[in-house]
Image 1 (cartoon, rainbow, N blue to C red):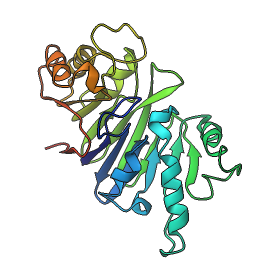
Image 2: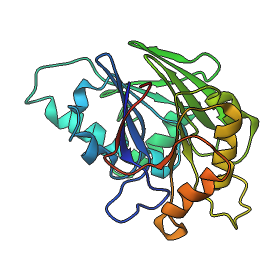
Image 3: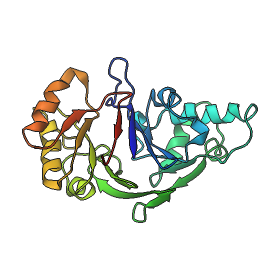
Image 4: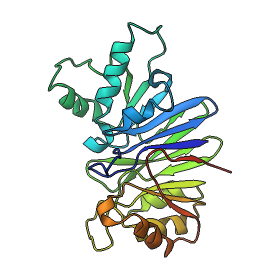
Length: 252
């Protein structure tokens, strides 16, 4: 299994960066997890966008969804020059489709703006998904609005925190994972309850027995190398900070 970091920034892009987005590839299957601002341009450096089997959204905040607009327009305009292919699936959280249409309606009022291009669904977080060799299970976490961490199982096991404050779901989703991709948007002085500090991320990874911790969703102003050092105070395994265009082979 390979993870490519397309965007590792928080709600605003770090210099030269992009908001949340990750490409997961395993045995010929490509899945995009979240699709924030700047992600779609980077995606095209690694795969043809029409060859992606699915895009899965953890929650409907703008920094996780806005480049779905660009993705949709690419697929729409490329139909004239490329032979028809199976449409990528778009999996949104419950109530996500109408929220997404609220963005697209600013320039196109069609209720089929996304569904005529993507194979569009709202996933049931209690059931999970199977996409090629990958199974994706959802765990509710502490963020606003409802947000789902993901456990992605294939040739390895990847846990993704999505955006979350401290909650039992983080331990559930990351237990014994090969890689825990975990947000750490709060600085250590923050008491905001809907994000994590690096030390909190490290503590979860340690208790869960995750084999590798990859910190993400970090604003450069709050410190990058310091985040690794702070997480390492709580987690005894390898810790890295996600950066755009980083590629990690998971399970080796």
